[in-house]
Length: 520
DNA sequence: AAGTCCTACAACCGCAGACCT
DNA sequence: TAGGTCTGCGGTTGTAGGACT
Image 1: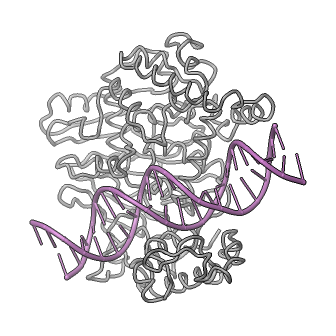
Image 2 (image 1 turned 90 degrees about the horizontal axis):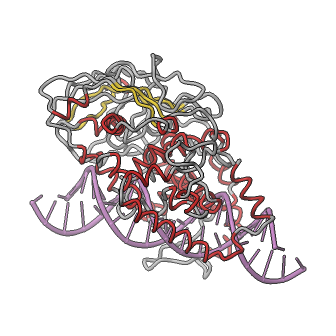
Image 3 (image 1 turned 135 degrees about the vertical axis):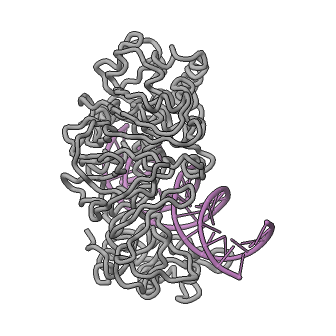
């Protein structure tokens, strides 16, 4: 509690609010909703009320806060305030380079899934990450830089297609919707823990160390610097049902380029019907890319869109047709796209139009010589700079085994492949089949639900919150099981207190006061 | 010094899924 | 099974403060 109050007192918003408190409390300054609910910045007293309420009653049932505590805030507001500001273990301050790297790479993989990203960044909130990303995106757009460092842009492209703007659930639904025999799509409930093994690196950083034991889905974020170890607190033995594909191993070693994915020892067991790539939004690599361009979320722009530099910089060649990204690691090889589909011409036109519009909007003053160019140049060596020029190559290998009858689809799966996706890939003709497999393998096995921060869940007294179902993959220990068509994790009963019944169980917001790590 | 622009942050809103009755 | 409620998520907006012109 004292920590909490200290945290609160350190928040600028509360400082600001405190000054307004007297005047605002129920006064004209505090806007109130139609139901007499207050809106706007929270005051310290409101925070205190909320903190006290949560301390007593736990998280969840946010709508009851208003009723029971007299707080004139709607449940959503309370939840938001708690999650983003009041809950323990929140990390304040700017993102570390490692965190930034994680965000970039996660975004490249899962798109605007801020909550999932947040689950990978202890102490960070989805809102924080979202704000960071949006700011970064604008900055890079302004600087004419692609959103992603070259070493991760490929999967960004491929995945971003599935990130819909209009529907927040479209992406996840593709992965979450029950698909009998497509258990790989539900690996988000896998357990994550580190486990050394031989591994191929998907993001070829300077470090690895993360591992995917055969048939053991592993998602582990190791920490080498500022990050507290994540998700390593549980060691889980996970028997993999034969109806599932194993997850790849992911481990983030908090170094630039340290996001590694182990696809080696990848023994896929496919017993289901022929894999339908469309299920996960996979199409041929070419069409996939095209779709990516056209279906990007509003806030997630492609390199084409993300640059306000002349589109021609992508089209005319600076880098000579298909010769790879060349020396400028941030450059985008449009020729590669252009060659792949006639639709790309249209995209080019669109991109150019966008570029022109953007330019006209900003007129000539967009990049005035001095300050802006200074800013722009700093962009080029901004915080992602450490990734530029690295040897990072999206690379993985997979060897899939198969059982059961497999037709064409499985044939691909059973093909041992070693792919290199990234800069180096451009130096070779793209093997469409291989790429398809690679993509499918990656996409199939990328955990679609990240584990939640370690302070969620866990053991402890049960006075607190309504725990949710196992959205969380953290906590003591789990036993993997197949629940119908989904893979879920069950906490060992020995380590988990009985749950309250009759109440919806929650996880992400669940916490134990007795089990909360210290505030950073 | 004043005005403008940009960034970071906080909060709200709408939608969708899960759960309850 | 349908409707209602609760919650989480992602998009968007508002604003304070700093940087820059």
